Length: 311
Image (cartoon, rainbow, N blue to C red; front, side):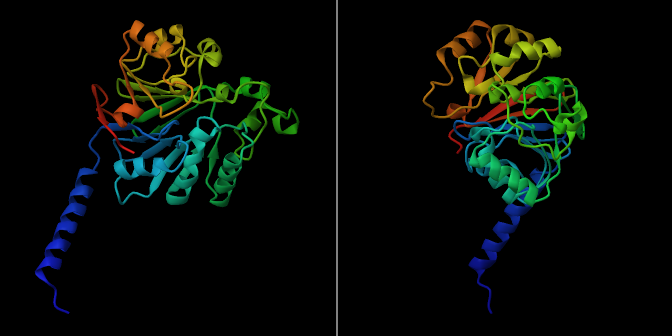
C-alpha cells in the first residue's frame, strides 16, 4: 500500500507531539500542586520532583479525570498515593472513576463511614482491586522522594472516642491502623470533623490540605499540634462561613489560600470568609473563577498559575 505524503506528514506531526510531550514531562526538580476545577468539591493532584503522583480527594463526579488528563503525562497510568480526606460525595465520588482508570499503589482514608451508595461502592472497588489501605493519624509521616508529608489530624485517641462500635475491633488503639478496619459509624460528630489535615514540605516550601475540617474541629487541632506557617493553604470547606477561624488563619499565616468551589446553594465562598481574608490581607484563588490553580516550587520560591475556564 502506497503511503501518501499527507499521511506521512500527519504521522510525523503526531510523533513529534508525543516526543515533545514526553520530554517536557521529565523531572524538573520541582513540586507541582494542581487544585483541580471539579465544581463544588475538592481534588488536588500533586506531582513530585521525581515524577511520583498523589491525588487528594476526587471531587463530586468524573471531572477529576479531565484534570488528571491535563496535568499527568499521557503515558503515566499509575498514581502512587490516593488520599480521601473524609467520606462525603463531593470528595469521594470521583475516586471511583480514578480507581477504574489508573493503577493505584495505595490509598489513605479514615475508618469512619458514610452510609451512602457512593461510599459503599468505593470500599468495594478498593477490595476488588486489592489496593492496599493505610489509616494514618496525628504525627504519622511518609515521603514521596524529597517531598515530605505529615498528618496533623485526626488524632488516634479522638477517633476511638468518636466511632462505633466500641467492641473488639477497637479493643486497643493499634487496631485503628488495621487496613481491614473500614466503615465504622461515627457518633454525633459531624463527618467533616474527621477530615485529614495533611502538611506537605519540600525544602522551605510548605502547603496545608484541610478537607472540610472547619471551625468545629480547629480548636481541637490547635490543642494537639503546633500548626506550622505555610505558603499555601487549601481553604477548609469550600469557603464556608465556618471554614476557618481567625486564630487558625493567623497561626498558619498563608501567603496564598486556594478555595475549591463551584456553583452551590450555600453561597460559598461566603461574604464572611472573603471579609476575613481581606481583614488578614490573605490573597486567594478560587477554582470556579480561576480554573485549575497550579503551584510550582523548587523548594525555595514558588509561583502560582491558573487555567481560567478549565473543566
